[in-house]
Structure formats: C-alpha cells, structure tokens
Length: 362
Image 1: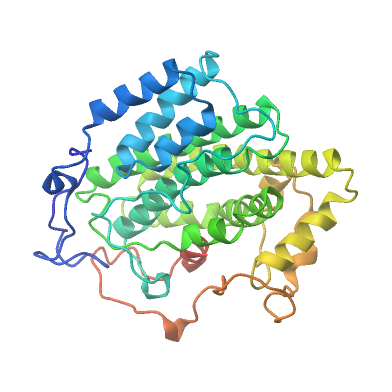
Image 2: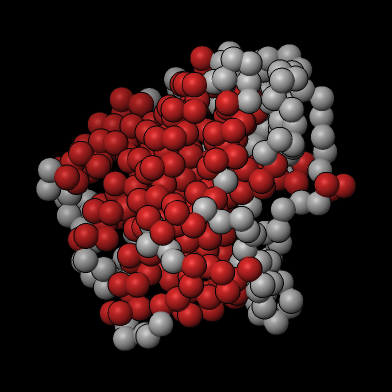
C-alpha cells in the first residue's frame, strides 16, 4: 500500500541509518501496488466467499506493507472470533499461493545480522519493531503451512490470537519510534528471523520447537535486560518500559501455546516423552547450545519446566556436525565479527544488553 513508508532520510548519526540519497524505494514510488482500502476490501470479499483462515493468512503473508499486515491481522482475528471464518479441513492441502517466505517492505534495508551492533535507544526500539513485524508473518505461516496436519479449530484460535498480539506489538513499537523522532526503515535490519522458519517449514514439530520454544522462549530470558536498557536512560523511558512489560506478558502465552500444541501432537501420534522429542528436534534443527541464564519463572508460566531446556545447554549434534542442522550458525556473532559504529544518545551505552540483541538476531 502507498501510505506506510517512512520519510526517506534518517536522523543524523544514528547507528545503521541509511544515508540520505540511498534510501530504498518507497511504495508510493512504485505506483502499481494496491491501496490499503483495496487490500482490505478484497480481504472482506474473500471472507464473504468462504476462504478459510489459512487462505486468508496467505493474503497477509503476501502483503508487503507491515502496517497493512497488522490491520489485516486484527480484522481477521475479530472475524474469526465472531465465527465468520472457517478452519481448513483437517488434512487439506496448504493454500496454493503460499510462498516460501513472506512479502516484505522494500523500504527496510536488510543486511547481514552479524554487522548489526546497535546501542542507542532508537536502534533498540527499531530492532524490537522489526522483530515484531516478522513475528506477524511467522504466526500466519504456522496457520497456513501445516493444514495437512490433523488440527482442530482450537489450534487456529490460539495462533490467530498470537498473530493479533504481534500485530499490536508491532504497531506500538512503530508509533514509539515515531515519537522518538525516527521510524521503521530509518535503520538497517536483518532477515535471519526467517531462517529458522524456512529450515523447519517441512514439519510442525520442528517449527514449534525451534521458532517458538527456543527463539521465542529466549525472549522471555532477556526481558529483564530489555527493561534495564529503557530504565538506564536519563530520564528513564517509562513509555517504552510499559510497552515491553505488556508485550512480555503476551509472549508468555505465545510460548505456552507452542508447548500446548507440541504436547498435543505428540499425544495424538502416540509419541511418549514430549520433552525428549523436543530435545531431538532442537539438536537436529538448531545449531549450538541454549544459553543460560534462563528466566525459569516466566518459562514455568508458559509450561516449560527445566526438564525441557536444561539438557540442551550442552551443544547440539548439529553444531558438532553429526546432524543436518541449518545452513548457518545460530550462535551469536563473536565480538571481532561485528561492525561497531559510533552512535547518538551516549547515555545508552553500546553493549549494555548485548544478550537482547543476540536474541533478536538469533
């Protein structure tokens, strides 16, 4: 859609900012894309014609504008709750228009995650905004990609709720960026958040294990560090702190949904010891070991007792070369592999909560 691209020039001296004259093409310059109104009208028509929640989810995935994705998501969640949308029949084929990766805005310039070392508050909020934008896509992908599984309506109920949560999170962080004098797309970002999704696209258990029970659970572990970053400013950033605190409460339920459905599938398939199945999937599809410290209290709220994750502190077979594993390491970049740039907002010292950025870049 033509309305959501930020101003082309980033604030001076911001880490990772795109220099003036080098900003990516905005949607308005393209001229060929549908307007937000046209996209929403087409979606409403598709609902009236009886498209399933999986087919409608593909419409969200194939929309490049993150603001429109968020609005579509919130609208679909309301229609779903009102019983206006059907679940896909159990065992049905995945939607024909589902691609291997979602459409993304061309006005957010992507770089290698290992080159990102952003210490300013604006850069931190930008990273959060970017990760929440990708999270919207991740939730619709899990809804659309595994329709061949024998899944009840409750599965889609849980994940449309999670998708709506992520859409709200993204919108709040983008608004916060604008309040701070920046915007989404003013800084560079990375696409490694989609790599784990691509590498687990063949199976729902691997997807739940790696994307939701490793990466998303890691967000719970580093939540306190994120809050400390916002409180470190002079004065402390109470607005950003409140957004993050509310988001973390939602994220507990998201990890809880993953645990619930992981256990459901194991039970459905008469597979004993879901914790051991989780260990097998993580060791096969996630490179490296899980990194302590863990937020045991938040993980417990999500249904993850230490038996789920403590055995994975040891390096996985994928890292040791004994299993297929993903094509790229998930381990955080070493200090000498990272480009560190000068930045504004000196009171937010670079590296104060590197673990948080490691989690976002994992």
